[in-house]
Image (tube, rainbow, N blue to C red; front, top):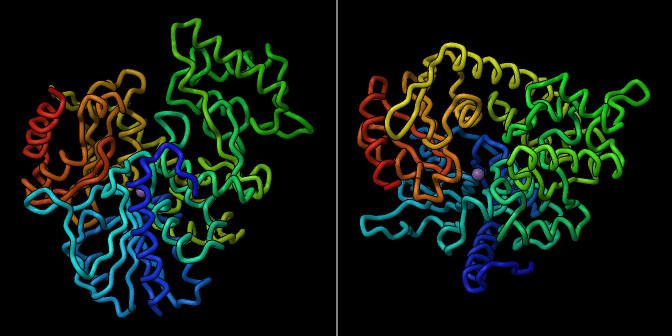
Amino acid sequence: MQKGLIPMNDFQRFQDKSREAASLVNESETALVVAHIDADGISAAAIASAALERAGKSHDVVFVKKMDDEAVELINSSSAELVWVVDLGSGYVSRFKHPSVLISDHHVPEKDEHGSPVQVDNVLHVNPNLYHLDGGQEISGAGVTYMVAREMDPANMDLSYLAVVGAAGDFQDSSTGRFMGCNRAILQDAEAMGLVQVDEDLRLFGRETRPLVQFLQFASDTPLPGLSNNNTGCHRFLDDLGVDLKRQGRWRCWNDLDEDERERVRQAIAHLLSSQGLDPGVLFGETYTLPTQPRGSELRDAKEFATLLNSCGRYDDAPIGLRICLGDAQAVREARDNRSEHKKQLSMALSMVRDNNMIKERGWVQFFHAGGEVRETIVGITAGMLLGSNGVRRDIPMIAFAHTDDGEVKVSARADRSLVDRGLDLSAAMRVASELVGGYGGGHNIAAGATIPLGKEEEFLDIVEDIVSAQLI
Ligand SMILES: [Mn+2]
């Protein structure tokens, strides 16, 4: 693996730890894989499962929404020789009592009362944050799991593309328009195997499956003047550039265009943005194509692949996502049905919050309470999509509440990267504030979550505001 821009000492120690973990897996006869339900967690589970299968280890895979008491109990009472926890678990090291636990995760590690990472004998903890590597942007849960799998057997390098999908699912390429650090090294493995193709292109969502008009109309976080949410505008724009929307009766997608057409569109979009004083840079960067997957399939684009996996997880069908990662074509058809359901739920959630003016501003945060109207599994993505959309502020974090099936309140917090650059850490804010009201939480500096008792929302917001204001001053 090439070192790229990673400080070699840190990376070496991280790799040594991955090798130690690989030996532990190779020495164990049976395993239970416990994974998070999002795209990164599902990709991580697929990597672990394939590596175990190839090594001849009998194993089960279980998906959990969060590391709650039930999940901890599942791990502690497992009869498997090894419990391999992927894409979660780092914040809960001291709670694991099973004799042999392996964690391959990129979330913020649990700290002891002196502020040092918790270390216990029964848990082997592989986590980039322990080596000054950035778990938020440089490597995902699937990436860390891949590091272990690769050390188990170099033949597992053919799983590298799943680590790319996992990192795309966690938006690790978003702020710079390309993968950095350890992700870069993993990407090089995938490229070398011919499993991922890297191009410089327009980074809008749906390159493989969205008809051109929808591709321009709906795809962007950055509003495209005259195109975003403007169907007629998109038609006219493409018409003026001489780009046919259909060919042989079929709607064309971005990847159906020839290079000449793509370049015309790219230049026109760059021109459109700069003429309005906007920076076109954010829309351009690397795209990641999986050339061994069929044309026109969402599996051919890393971002679309990840979105499909996310839709599985959100509708309690993470095992379908696992089957997709492991190459089951029937599972892809089942997941597509989930995805259309997901889109419908999401657009309903967005219009509900907007149409009812549910977002309330406070000094340091804004929030909405969806009650039981929005599924707890999509309330976070709803918050993220609202942030900075028309009429919604981007300069303060968005906090979203929803009731869970167990009579608690699920909290999701999202922020713009510029706030993180100024010192915002939503992971700390969610953890501390939730614990003070009798709940628990954590996550990343830019996106975090918590679960709190019903009726504690107001008190929780007061504490979050105190923390956020202190972080940003
Ligand atoms: Mn993750």
